[in-house]
Length: 431
Ligand code: SF4
Ligand code: SF4
Image 1 (tube, helix red, strand yellow):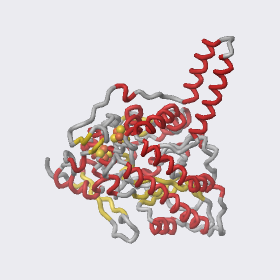
Image 2: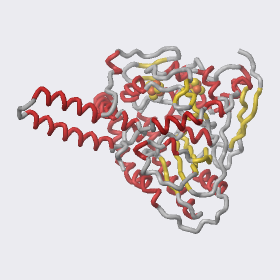
Image 3: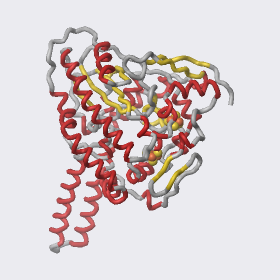
């Protein structure tokens, strides 16, 4: 491969507060206008006609299935998630109620962008950006929970620990993820206090309880671009960024989307697509709900995630996650190649019962492995009830069938109010 022509340079604040700014070169052949990656009218159409809903609610049958499989296949992971859920309860309650807290001062009316950015960076958030809060990305069942009159979104990315992430899939990586969520909750409290002290209201989305998908607003705020792996590829640590949004009525100035060259780089890289143990990633982007993206095949991913500690091979094997965007883009300009591609260092991973998979080798699973119920758990219970009532018609078994249905439904609703998968899809009824 040959050296690439230089296109443009993106300058970003350093990774940590006080670090020197960083310049990322983008090759000419990777340039693509951010506006060309979305069709606003389509986003509006889909959000109106087919509002987004959380996976935990729409696919609650698989959430319950996953819980059982995890206990059987990886009891240590199940135990870790339970502990995490207990630990996070107080933080979660605070996040949910954060919109009801009152400001502690009178607002000055000044633009407070820099003040919020400085405090967020001092607290430890590496990526901080501002954009319009886009209500089209609020889950249907959360619409009433998200306060009106808070039109601005502060997008905040916190780095998950590097070395543990490189061991994915592993319990260590899940512990690191949980630790980042806990830290997010603590930092958000401090940042919200600061916003209150400026005289403004704030409501927090994440960790574990979130309004809806966050990546579109992070892209709007210029904090990265969507990777083929479905994750935000942020400048310093790629998809190792844990995301959070605070909405507010504070007067702020919006940032702009940035062309980091990610969409075209992904077309050349394709590492996550080739390394996914479940073959759940589609290498090419298509238009989906008004956005050009590679849609993940959930029924190929979830069975893997469930059995292998949240999997995350797609995060681990992304060069931008592992090395950072600057070295990856510099290497591409110098050589026309993807840094680390084809090496075991980047691409190798281990699955506990299957062994080590070097670059170019993938595990095999039988069809049974991917058998997973789809849709809502309540619908499956109702189908089950109808079958039982039909065969029991007129007999005492009818009462038993109804009793069983009621008990199972209650159990289902309780489960859906619990944090699962380290809190990534908290049950929608957990208010
Ligand atoms: S989590 Fe694992 S199975 Fe799911 S998309 Fe990523 S690599 Fe594939
Ligand atoms: S591994 Fe490569 S193709 Fe996948 S998201 Fe990262 S850069 Fe894009």
